[in-house]
Image 1 (spheres, helix red, strand yellow):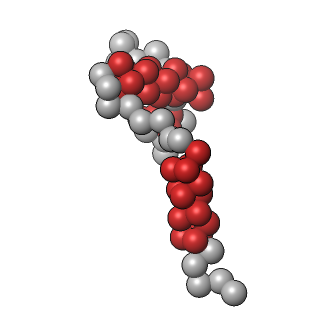
Image 2 (cartoon, one colour):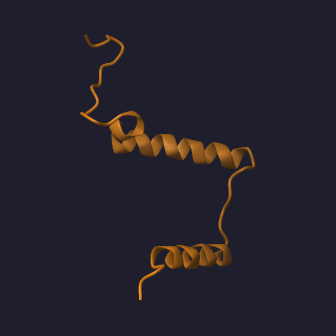
Amino acid sequence: MASPSKPHKAPAGKRGFAAMDPERRRKIASEGGKASHRNGAGHEFNSAEAREAGRKGGLSRHRGKA
């Protein structure tokens, strides 16, 4: 029997964030990012860091391919 406090029934096989609508997930993620910056724990990439991260990601993604 469904609980009266649960108005939304998640699609079969989806739980937690996967069952939420995309707009609600975006809002929660945005709040988390803003909170980390307020606490001084957030990180913003400068162009050199971003370039290095992209390089590493490309190497990882294409490792073993000729």
